[in-house]
Image 1 (cartoon, rainbow, N blue to C red):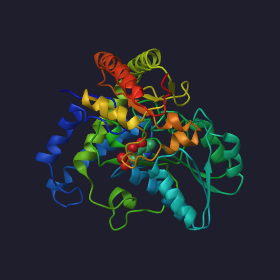
Image 2 (image 1 turned 180 degrees about the horizontal axis):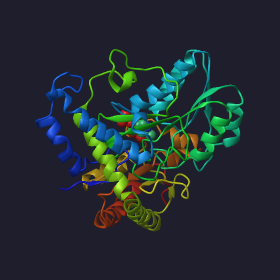
Image 3 (image 1 turned 45 degrees about the horizontal axis):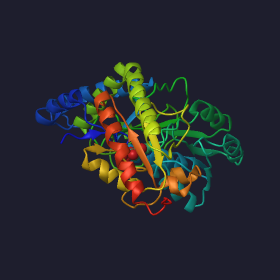
Length: 386
Ligand code: PLP
């Protein structure tokens, strides 16, 4: 059975063009770029090209691109690196709905004497900017606010938030892992200091990421022990994956507008179809300010996990909450922060589409899901039987 993959916010298929770009680096040009000989030195060029390709996607200078091992590393490097470079006790400002890759380092700093502010969101998942302003008045800060939420797709007003942080003299980091390839990002127009990218959400492989570091930003290196990446991130470069991410960035930049519009049409068709055919369904998150590929929907009175298992039996892959926290069966911290009722949090399913999603796949999902929901409702202990 072919899998209908609607879980692209968890990870995405590696693009065939990316695999093709990586193969020569795995098969033939496997030298170490730090070597003095020509065999090693020849892989410097592909790395330089990849740096330019990633920089072009966000309108940065190539020298501002630091390759890391993943989005989680980029987030840790940014938050801990900026706080450590500041030296003194700092304000660490973030939101209640961040990915654990941001909440982890922020809480780590909070436990070590920095003042931690976790800003609340409203029922649409939007940030309380008044509370953010109050936290910023508490002293110089390292602020980390995600550009878009991985569970709901809700987009935060990063241009406005960046202006607030910069006006207060703080350092601004954004976790942009979920927005790459889904909306245009321009770091010359939105002057964030630090921005995290993850390859595997962008049709590159898992195990490669980027931290954008604006020129002049003070950052204590996180990985020590080598001169790579201008001594900002030690460790022999993961050349094939760097090249793959460069290619993925080039593909994303080329087809951004067209793909985003097409994906949004399919997502809207899925959303409208499910709301029309499944009673007691509700969309979670601000529908006006949302990633074009994401739909987070709750089917009340049933368990999201049961829906996932039954969808999986008919070849559909989706997710309940964040892939990184599922497995624990803990209700989503994002939906809880939005005040979504208990019965709806537990019945939440996240569908996330990609450039490879087809109309046929959406129509198949729309045929399969309503009977699954009715069957689960019929055996749910939370539904009143008449
Ligand atoms: N930030 C966000 C918003 C994410 O969705 C994820 C992964 O799900 C990460 C960070 C972590 O990225 P990585 O899996 O590359 O470590």
